[in-house]
Image (cartoon, rainbow, N blue to C red; front, side, top):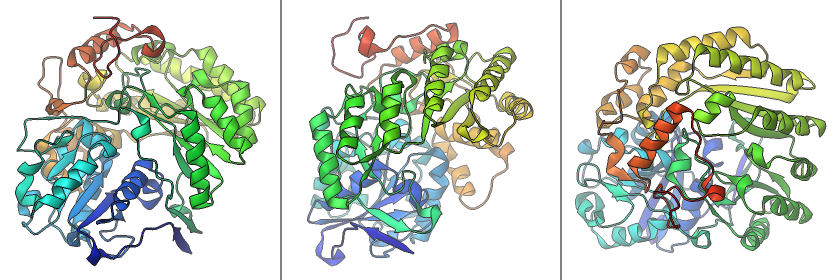
Length: 524
């Protein structure tokens, strides 16, 4: 059984623009993405536009079953680098050639957006005509105006050159990321699509929930976090708007469960009050993760009363390496947060990284000992889950120059698996992480291997040959994109990381002149 509610129905023959919003991952991931909902709702509010959804592994829309080749514009949301081969599979399934050079003038305009496309569009440039750089609401209305005016978008790409937030590979020297400056201008999809199904593989991450955007961006300054750099500064929605949107969403969907969405949800200045108010309104409240700094007994009691059973926090590593990563949380803070959760009979999920810059065998041993100590705190084996992932350097972060040592990572994973046991302990495959690294920091020359991997599994040795070597003097492929943060700031942060020096949170200490916002600079 599978039923969708709030699907938009229009007559494709009575609109001027048919737009396929495509998500190159499974349905449950697509429908957990607030960005996917925003694009669908925003575009379908245009009377002359029909936006339909296409999700991997299919090449036809959920709304009308139309193949991708029948649309005017086909858009892909690139949230994860490992989804790049999925884009090509969907194009083939939809009746299109994968390489833009092989497509005809009558074919749809193929575009891409999302964090991966905004940070480094080069790896997918052989397949994509045009890239949206930044947040949808800041670009799509003007983009649609141009689509309406031109006879053939694929043949008239130069029409988009002057549009902020657009990058045309091979035609433009670069582009600048654009974003919504004031969250009052952000699009809030109220009549969200949700499904009822007995197939667990189709259930979104938050179940039948209304997705409520609390904030965008994060300025904590974690040096490994691409999203935290791309979407600075942190911009929060005011409490009155949040409460009203929640109520409007309940009227439009009938849903009483709310998932709070944002890169730094618990940094909202009235987060505890928001949770309390929503619960008083009869909502069940959940949130994907919490900053350890925000975890206290009052907050957890509020969330528990709403039905939240598990909190997710990210210690990352030992104190020394947390300093390298600029995440200054102490071991005592981690233990206090866990102890508070366990006292309330809640479960805890922890995320760690291995392979951070400057990590030594001694650091790995210390992290292992720390994890064992945290495991002993758990009242029973199912109350604590631990996930360890290889650190992957990302473009447009202070760690963009760091290496990914595949051999060292494999040894680290082998060591951790040997010494840390348990059903609730998981370590990511180093080979998958290597592939993600290469796709993250590569350029257009990756087109061949991306295409090959869309047909068959490529041997890891073939991927390893493509491992780049960047240093502080390198001309980086993604420098064609200006995300608003100065390269000098990234370089200074990287040097501070190698020395283990911290950069305190700018929202409490003051501006560091990174370039992302218009506040007065405190430091030069």
